[in-house]
Image 1 (spheres, rainbow, N blue to C red):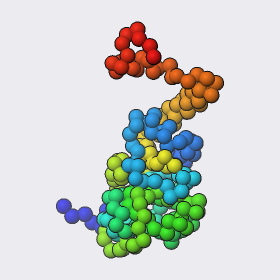
Image 2: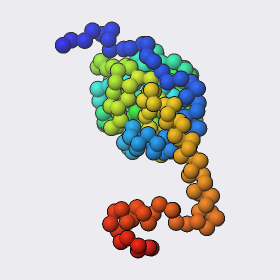
Image 3: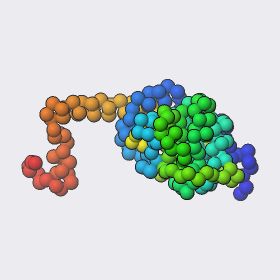
Image 4: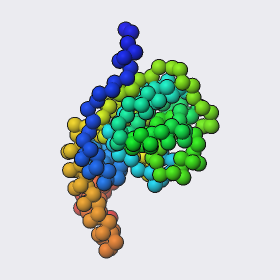
Length: 230
């Protein structure tokens, strides 16, 4: 079935709220991933160009054919301030899909960051800057700009299913995606998880070195007999 050109770019999407983005940005991607059931994380190949880079915002989803970035240019043109470009580059790193020029355009447009399952270039300039760029690799070769792609359609990026407007949070550990309808619940769980981890770390520093659940878990796994202790 043919698809009209007008259907390849969706301009109007429902986004996770700015308040939810602000609240979620206070948590590590790891905390959010844990309370989301350890689902929704992008493959570890997608990394920030600098470990200090962090990003949070609603996803503008982009699907491209490997080696072509035309759809990314379209996404840059329609994205709103605070959005995050999330690009399904199919994990291909045979050429870069963007570099310093497009990242500079994105930052000047108010786009919160770029996450791409593909390669980028101008890595030295991008890594020394503060603008968040996450990528699967590097390649000095540039892309073509001629093959149709899709903007704001459901995508699968590095193993994670993403709907336009879903929340994406990225930091030094990688990227997690949370469906927009689940964000409030996940934020509440993340707050409890962070409190528990903070108390656990404080306990370790005070000499409580063994987690209380360990022996029960070992018995359940058959590694300790009933009544046996470490």
